[in-house]
Amino acid sequence: MSQTLQDAYIVKTVRTPVAKYNGKFKHVRPDDLLAHVLKGVVADTLELKARVEDVIIGCAMPEAEQGMNVARIATLLAGYPDHVPAITINRFCSSGSQAVALAADRIRVGEADVMIAGGTESMTMIPMMGNKIALNPKVLNDENIAIAYGMGITAEKVAEQWKISREDQDLFAVESHRRALAATEAGYFKDEILDYEVELSFQSPGKLETTQQRYVVSQDEGPRPGSTPEALTKLRTVFQADGTVTAANSSQMSDGAGAVLLVSEKILKEFNLEPSGRFITSAVVGVPADIMGIGPKEAIPMCLQRAGLKQDQMDWIELNEAFAAQALAICNELDLDRDKVNPNGGAIALGHPLGATGAIRTATMMHGLKRTGGKYGMVTMCIGTGMGFAMICESFQ
Image 1 (cartoon, rainbow, N blue to C red):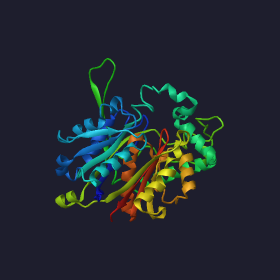
Image 2 (cartoon, rainbow, N blue to C red):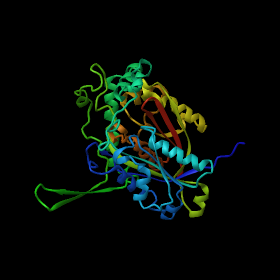
Image 3 (tube, rainbow, N blue to C red):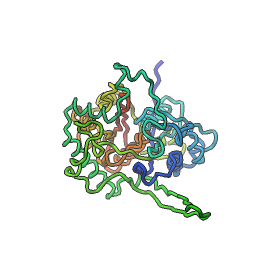
Image 4 (cartoon, rainbow, N blue to C red):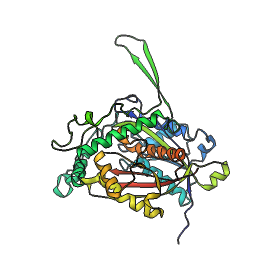
């Protein structure tokens, strides 16, 4: 028997600043970053804390400091009642946006009225692929070898297959930094960012006294002034000697967290809430692992079809810049409007804290749509081992 889906409304989206690898969040735990945004996302609606029916959190490397079901630990650290459950999910780079989609779907099918979604990742504390790399030996068989490819190698393969030049990649990277710096200077990120106060204690050798250090992080750390094509051409490739992918035209390793509060129409009326928008739909699809970066090329049309919308109706597209090569390949293949793609810069400049990025970019999209008067926005990204994710939301003005 078919059932009419109800709407899942987005009430609030928040995020931490994104810090560079070994940067300002070097000594900050990912569960503390997550607890910070979980507090902030309900700061204006504290009465909803006890009504939350689940907290779904994405994390790409859920071990060590972000293991032990980091979602539940951070939920308790954030002061939520004991009866509020939480789950950590992993779909690699799309984990944070997948969490939003799963939370929205619980509301849409009528199984929940208040959900929180988000993501957290400290790439400083937990390295890429985790502390213990234990790939199944079968991935070294010829038919499975692409599973073992590093992400940089897959980017090189995309660049080769879609004929993306080194020059175009470098120009794309420079533009990402330019847009991110302009958006920061204009204060476009202020409403979505929750300032984070870092408190550190140091003890000198042979002394009992400790020194306290406090500082507030309020801006993304990644955007670099002075990024020019001339400077980038001097960098060596890092994944393939005769390749085109460099550290500068790849996403930055980063630390950060984000959270999204979603509710049903029943809750909107009960608490007299003004939503910022609504979740429409999402799509995820598999692609060959050796060209994993091309995933959004398949996910975007599928998502648009499910939404009953045309590509030119999208006013804002957050296309995660895992690599300039794959972002350009997708833009060229789908003929995306470059003015609508990452208007505030992307992961090359702003960073990519893996499992948190989807939630972080959801916040950027929703606030960007509100500021510019846009109606429809999309978050989309490629996923390691060969997948693509896309989701569409509507903004209310």
